Length: 411
Ligand SMILES: [Ca+2]
Ligand SMILES: [Ca+2]
Ligand SMILES: [Ca+2]
Image 1 (spheres, protein in one colour):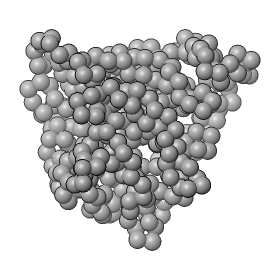
Image 2 (cartoon, rainbow, N blue to C red; image 1 turned 180 degrees about the horizontal axis):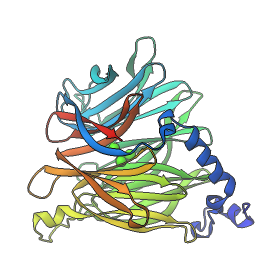
Image 3 (spheres, protein in one colour; image 1 turned 30 degrees about the vertical axis):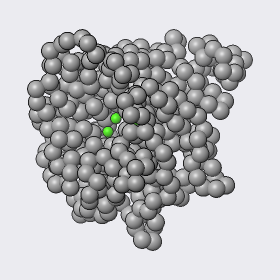
């Protein structure tokens, strides 16, 4: 089906709902996606590999508790894991994968670091750090670092004023590079703007492109479906309740416009993923709490997180599956062979930080079915990565100075 005249009307900012996502069912788009999947990383060629069980692989003693974890690859250098560590000294740590182990590579001065985001602009390699607290001079800055290939280290590149920053997301649209920060709160006020920045190639700096009102923003996730680009924010708290709408935005012309609102409960993470020609969004709900309403602690934290699926005809994400979680703070999607998996970071059950993270396997009609229970302590963030030696998952703990790498043993 070719794009219709109607689809042109999406570029006026009037009524998004009338904008048919015709490209979604366009055969060429689907063909192209399947092709990139086939050509992608070499391990997918093994194809028939099956996840058997999960094995302890490396325990990393970290300088302090770790919030966000980001794993990335630098061409001709290798894999890195960068951690957002709680303590300012020695700060947040970058590890390099060497002989099948992460070893310390560099420390960064950070102020209650929350998250890192790796991104590239042509050959330039960057890391954006979200600082939650003010620095020693009382300034509240998050910092973008740039990789120096000669010195093999990252150096500060640009500082940006943020407000209790929780997360950075980076993305490209039509050859332009953007960053968006999740500003969590300013003082006690959670209802503030989060900001989208655009790379200005003439001065080499990120500049404000758009502001979006958010409520205790915790996470941004960018995704694209066919030619359409989306951003979704996890709104955690509006000052009185964690029961707040989190919003999906669609890129129309030159700005993001509201696309859909979804009720969330202390939303802390969105994960977008696709399974064949289906598109999903999973939200991690961490806390059901409203000022003045008394509940038992376990009831506040043992709540459903939700997987939504895009209904192409309705042009909306609709609930696909509820998953009982325990103060969920992260979802991570990964594949092994031809199988699709989700892992959830459960962090707290109302009494204890010792709770299992759970791996779910996609089982078609049954949806996601729990297959492995992994004991974790104060689990904060899961990342999956693959090297030529196999597949791994890694998590950080917000409650103890240890991060763990687990190996996925396959049949
Ligand atoms: Ca994010
Ligand atoms: Ca995630
Ligand atoms: Ca993650």
